[in-house]
Length: 377
Image (cartoon, rainbow, N blue to C red; front, side):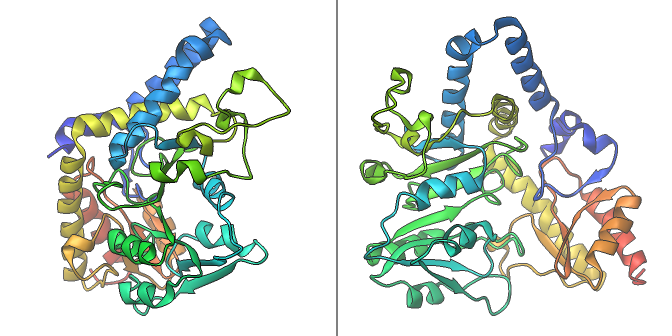
């Protein structure tokens, strides 16, 4: 397993049992070293580092993100957050003839918030009967010729279920609508191919499974759409000739950079380059394999202790987000933290998420402690 090779790369694993990668990926020595590299360049080169070195770092990050999701060159725009990326898309759409946006009650609220505040936009939120997923049939019934965009999640953050986003995109396209997928809980822990899935937009970032920390995100835009995307919220990095410094006319880049905004923060860029290098070296298929071996064992062990994880029914639809129902999630998470176990609380659940750098003994020890807290041991 990959853990034998990679555990020493993540210092937090030596000080606690870290099972919260779905909230924040563990900091690697490599990411820290890349940040220090950036600081050294800043110290030695000053502003000249922009043109000699940092410009290439931005290009390297666009390319690296593209490889993670199977995107062609020129289709990735850099952003500081998913919200910023969503804004670029939302401010590119015409809602006069298609005022309808479809999302779900299981999506992270950033998605509906983007459109709930827009006058004249109709936001349809599809409900979930089991709080695990939303049946494709509900999407089919809701999408019509008034729909501008279907915006939903690749991996549900409160159940870990993988949604059939290719099917959802096909339903949207059948009515002339576009499809945007929030992949923040997907990219890095599952394999993604935006071209094979025929997605129009895909958003993810470094915070969680891509091991880049805060402040680095990206937006994939299908190349056939570039010419028609003219975001009304923009910045100088979207300008085709940004160093012309012309305040009287704005000309968008020909590629996805037309969807970028202001100057990127370089510390997150360098941290993310370090994290991506680990995932590429480890191999995303191997990361997925090892992570799911841990996850399935976690689910099996939890069930054996009388817990009832809220997860997708089929193993192939699951990811490393395991929701353990709890009457006091915040209290249990705090008690676990006092014992050296780092997890997270969500309404009605303790959320546990192993990653490829974890070991089976770690989640088994956590479950034993949780069983003690609940009087199950």
